[in-house]
Amino acid sequence: MICIRCGLCCLNLDVMIIDPGSIRPDGTVNPDDPAPALRKPAKERCPHLSFLGDEAVCAIHHLPCYRATPCDLFDQMGPDDAVCLLGVYLRSLDQEGI
Ligand code: SF4
Ligand code: SF4
Image 1 (cartoon, rainbow, N blue to C red):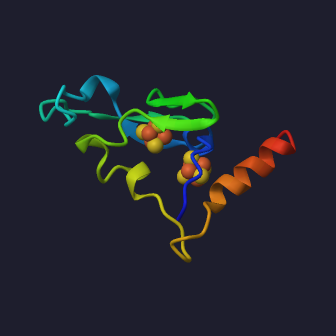
Image 2 (cartoon, rainbow, N blue to C red):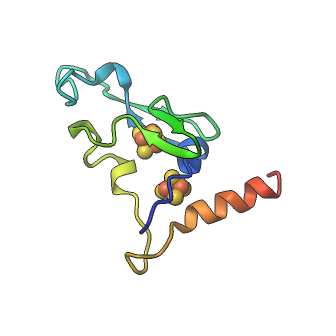
């Protein structure tokens, strides 16, 4: 799946993310933290999200703590070179003002 980095999933979805306060300087999760993940509610901006122009940037995408998170595992059925359909759908809702 090709992500065009619209950031709409990071804004619109209800998803479990790594708690920014649980990330150690080396990019791993603090193993002593009993609750290193938190729920990012739908329609709320993820604390890890920023934008460079129109391009979404995830601050933890390259870190070890990102591996195997719901965001990391997100994919869609179909060819590897297909554009993300979730983004297409969320943009269509945006355009309709939903
Ligand atoms: S952790 Fe990264 S990919 Fe996941 S919602 Fe937040 S900004 Fe988006
Ligand atoms: S909605 Fe799809 S294209 Fe947009 S940032 Fe999320 S994964 Fe990438």
